[in-house]
Image (tube, rainbow, N blue to C red; front, side, top):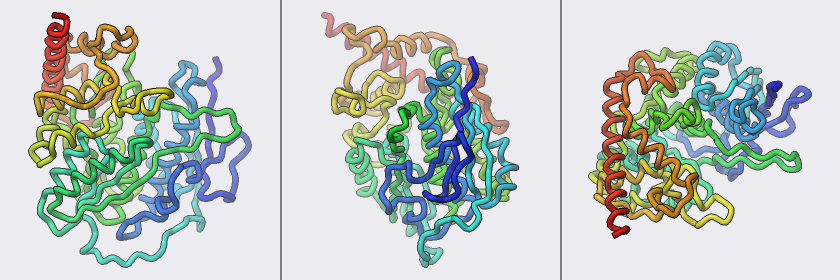
Length: 443
């Protein structure tokens, strides 16, 4: 079968110089977002440097192309060949970062990417003048999704007494904006310092009249999140961006061979963060190893889901707030005729969530659409549960950690394996709890 290439040409604004023949134009207009949340109208206290504007534009272009290129057209119905042209302020610098960037995109999405860069010229759109003094800038920035991990980190940092603000970068989850607001409000009530919120959109419009259905896998979403947080940090001169994800899901070792490669998400995998830091260093003119370089890091790399939940509890968050978070990989409320619930209860993120809340509270009262140990469910509905149980009965070694994706040279595989094993123990506790529950119901 001949491989089909999807070609996309990012426009700085509608009406700017169009793409070559056979290339599809994309721009900020494909994002469904309020004018106040457009890339040039963000509530930041200082302008971002050109390289950070470029990074965010590249991430938005990548995410839009990711949604517009359907995996079903790939030779294996997964791997795609995507070409993307993006205007940047310094094409030479981005060309030097190309190797790191394509490695990053290949790691995150599992696709073949060909990126080209052209001069943005004087076409860049800027917001109005910004006059906030440096002492009012935020001192910390973190991604805040409304999930358990980001909630736990935000609660910890919001309760640190400081005159300097904590900036939380949020992306609206369609159909769950109210839930995200509720979880954010819980953090805001705990605050011992100023807390600011930066809302962004991740919703890409369906193309009209083109017969194209948007791709649903959205593996590049994590890069969009990270680049937006980096953009905010660069604007307000913050040297570290926190992307909180418990260590077991950050590594996300596949439960089976069918989940290998980018079939398991790698948004905060150590190898992903390594490449992202390399890109930032190369396009910002810095050095990835320099203490002054802006870097992204995962503050929960050494913690399991249960340990994150326990820390969130100890930071003052009640159980019902943790249960109101968003974790599901396939929320039923987004499915046609599905129940209006945020969690299916059957996907791997839901299973890890269940084990984490059980570890911290001894119970999990989250309303799930189904329980994977329910014997009335179909085989397809319980496949994750069966694969999990088989995986827990199999030894996990350091070699298993690198079989799916490499680790950066400064990683400590033995420490990472210890996190995975503690997480597996939490999952075994969940399995034992479910088995005992099934026995009681049967009797």
